[in-house]
Image (tube, rainbow, N blue to C red):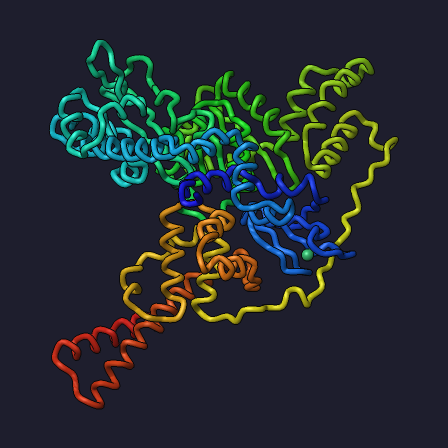
Length: 582
Ligand SMILES: [Zn+2]
């Protein structure tokens, strides 16, 4: 029965399930750095040694060494079987219908989804080719005039849907796909048995999800006709309130994001990236959803809203503030950039340049400043009535904030503004420092090159993008190498996976235990040096393999002499080794 649940389904299930959310009703979790700490439910103890890592979606007890992802926790804590857990989680996320369908052998949603992703990929390719047709030279000129380079066009896979729908269809049908699926992804409209192109004569911006799959398109006209922009309609794979344009691209560039700027349109993202401001995503409009916020706060601790400099942009910023309050957990920060009247990020950076925009980022307004600015604007602080009116308005807002520390700090600011701080005594919660017994931190795996590589990769699957020369390594027989390459491939295929999801791929595999062990391995490498260490280890691995080949040839030369081609190979290896040592 197991193999009937598509991996894609389980992956989505693990992604949707936040391990901290699942565990927190049962255990009292305390935030500590990247981790949460609690008393272990699986052994009795006085000092908490049970840790939950939000980013890795993984738990580990330093006392009894119990560990795993969200599914493991559920199985162990509630004493359930794997399938029962999958069913529970499906119900929790409203996905139980699909779960039940797997067992009725119905055509399931996930197969359909996979097909639709293939369709959008094919269409995207055709739109990209269109850019370079002689008949569409005006489109390329349009980009040149706007200063958009070919690199940027490629980076965002931008294309063009021209007026020749028959030519489009003839190329599409060559891929042996059902034409009706073009209706299902919203690219075509059917009227009286005739197909129409929804995006005719529009520049096409493919919108990619977290994993790099194209879920829909945005289309922009070349001239001033209206509507200027249209998006794909809501489909099985496209839902506007979930899309974050540019997130896939920025995640590909950075494994760690110190902040993310949120803008309205995809043009804003593209122009900012073109100017070298990479940490930017668009929510395709001004409405930020809980879905967006959950995803974004998983990637970064600091969000900076940068809406258009018009009245609706300002109003949207306020709405975003109130929406964000309930997502402000400890350590999460929200800021705002306000642009001059009638400027959007695209026009602003073109007019004032990168430095000026960077200054805007540096001097962005804190959430607390913006909040008090708006609320105090209309209030006369000398009037007792108005002061109490302010308190009535502000307290419900502050109570939405889940972080107690942030809440207390903002209440202090409020009291300061009201001039009555001295009459109240505020105590921050005493931050009891929990010092873990050093014995727990001992290394229990030795540091060898491949162990470091595998360990860092399992704990940070996004490092896989750094491995580029896989084909060189494939034929080599080194202990652990094939395992490493296998994980690299899995991570590259399932882009943006977290550790919990990676482990899940191994559940019914003989390597399940070892990969879980690696996930909790304390490699003692500092977070900020992980990328450098990983790159160094990769280089070291490459060198070791070259040396190995080199020594074999050298030995043969001494014993039997070498053939001409082998001599060339030896010379080549020598050169490569020299280059690596440089
Ligand atoms: Zn324990």
